[in-house]
Image 1 (cartoon, each protein chain N blue to C red):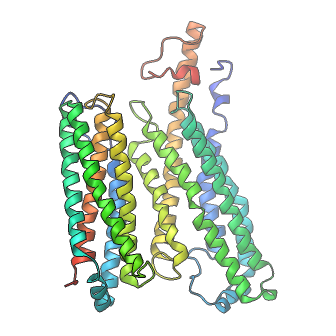
Image 2: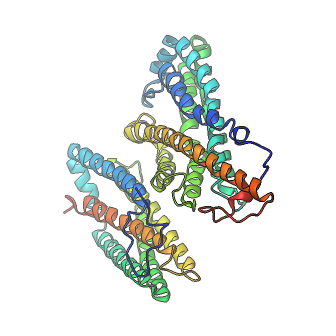
Image 3: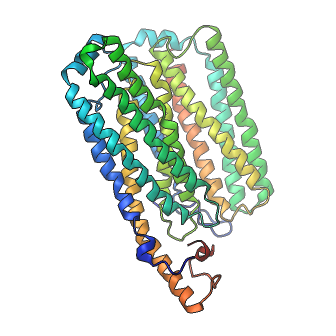
Length: 269
Length: 197
């Protein structure tokens, strides 16, 4: 523990990063979903001509929406990092496997969010010059990428849940039920495996299960996690303040652990 | 919601708090419930097709699988009871028995899937078989996860007190395994019996 670093400095960017989650969500829904005509998706059983009509009619909205989605999609990264920092305070034995997995899983989630937007952007770039089948292919590729790359997000969600369940605090930083929810939500994305086989019905990209349920489950995860990260930060500040005070009193590391701090969190702070 | 999976009960005392895994179970059962409703709605639009397709399923295999899962579930209950009494070796025996009996479900299901594929029946054959493969397939994934949980619990009970912190995990694993039972108890009559004869 670096006692020279004050709590203010230590936790300086944590809240700002955590706030990026809801900002990402609001901006992504507006840009990717509303302007980009992805909420709900254009049905997979639309003909190429219908798809071409869509791109040619709404080119400017889709361009603006996808440009915004590519900008704000990046915010998923700092938001992920805020979760990682809290998780590191749960993995106090120096084994940060789950924290790192969560960071990579959440960080790499930015890739499908941003790159899938490129396909829709490409479709809207010069739609009058492209064949309807090409436009249909671009729209399909966007959806196949964002839906079928779900497993990387699942890694982050399951890692968060597993780590949270291992929290030995009397009152865990992330409630057990929330940890189980994140594990379930991450695994529920497995339904997307069925998406390439269907152009209509509940498993198609516009289907009530593979679109409405899965995206609402993901959005709820973002809001829920942000709420508990914000609740965890002041508690961690208090824990560290107590440890700083102890270090000040004893003047050395490895002092008797604080009550409720049986893992010797002092050494890892 | 609090969690019984962390707080160790007193020696032999049952956990009084609902394990956090109930969140997982409630969410999972809800999704299955919605799928069941979707099946019934779709069935109401295509009754002859669903009846005809259902009649091609082997009811005996389905019934056997129901008995296998219920027996395996009973053994898990006995494991939890033994764990609550601190009897580690008995707990391990029941967990092993539950695993071995439960494995029969997997073997049966693979035989059944193999038969369907051999007859050219798959997910896209018709709407009935879409539901058949999705419902039984997703259930099968849950079953496999349950088998892994049983195996992990069996290994962990080798060197750890079963009425300590591990008790919550045994209880949570048992609840999950019962969910696998429960889902099958709905899936079996819905797919195999409803209008099939």
